[in-house]
Length: 290
Image (cartoon, helix red, strand yellow):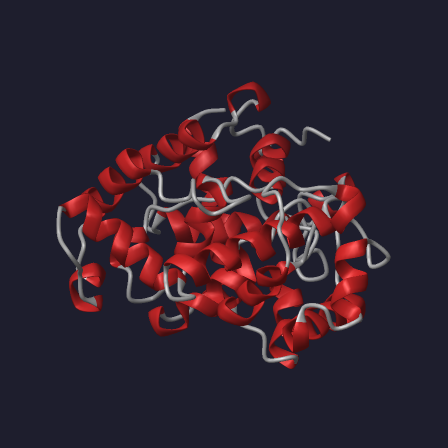
């Protein structure tokens, strides 16, 4: 597709959805809560809804991290051990072996009525293991984890919130490339890591973060902007930056997600079906690869 048409199609999607995606913004002071609500928002699991159930039972990183204190466990997911509410892990939670926190987590899982996806219990296991790791090593805090990792990268003993927030975009990218700070967060890759960080208002340096999620892939494929064989994180990121659009990369990311996601289909969803596509303002210049 030629660049001019690609720009028009993307700009339309971002502008149309702007009233919605501007509501995704969050604050640095809520970083730990943001981590819990986004880190496992993958593979069809509505982690962003599950957080409401964790909040109901007053569960945070530290309290979730305590649950595995009472058992010897292998880090690798074991489906017979942790793959359903009837598995030994969840039965032990229900029966009080993991104290109040275990019972509360069990109830959160049992009551959750959002989309679970195919890997629901595997993602919950990742959450349990990662929270346990953060509790034991980083004072039950994802923001503390970030600051310690960045301080180590800079050769410092510690770093203040102020200094962390004032990091430049180039420093952030270099830090990510050299330290890959998602590696110690079980089940989190670069895509999700960027998603966790991307909407923190105070973090100017994340304006070029990008999550290549299913909705963004769908948008780019259906419109014909980028071929499926070329749809990888770095290619998409560099292509979108090359278009020199009047939005940050993260804003474009949010706009395309909102425009093409299953979640947004009631208000948008123009790339979901050929019929809905006809209602799009720029349907005459896209390839309609349905």
